[in-house]
Image 1 (cartoon, chains in turn red, brown):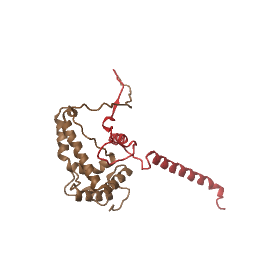
Image 2 (cartoon, chains in turn cyan, green):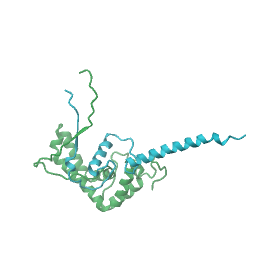
Image 3 (tube, rainbow over the protein chains, first blue to last red):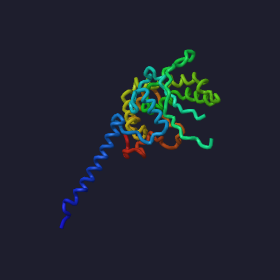
Image 4 (tube, rainbow over the protein chains, first blue to last red):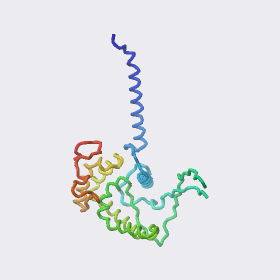
Length: 86
Length: 159
């Protein structure tokens, strides 16, 4: 009077599908972050530093330890603009 | 107006006009966020006087600091660039190990104490710069010298 094996098949499917979503999300996040672990809990400072990283290296997660900025860095600083309200 | 509608300032303007010639030029720092985080305490050690001078100038400039404190600001930039350059020259491997660890761990210093200790030793031997935590309690071991880090993913001693 054991449990028939057909009753366990859905559990196998459920576990497989949770695994697919979990690993899929892991790889998609890695791909979006240049193969590094994703940043989390970023504040405004972190975000603006990542924008600065992009101005230096061309990628949000790219890093460089040069002491000299690339040519044109000093004029590539963006101004945040907003429509006039009056 | 009784209410202010939501406005999104997501557009940016990149003005490529260089600074006028009467303002002396300074080379901007090319290090990105993780190397700057890694070198921050050494920059603070060597450049403390310049940084304090700049902040004092800005505090006393009554809101005109961006214009009046350009000279102090150039000193700050040059000093920080000199620290980055020296660390790159003398401790490149340890520096790279530390900032790559930081970059992979959300820039959280307590995850990377092992490369940090090696970097600190190398920088202290070669450049004489020491990491100190300003304002830390005197009677306790500073947090960066404790082998166990409370919030790290690895719970044991990191070195």
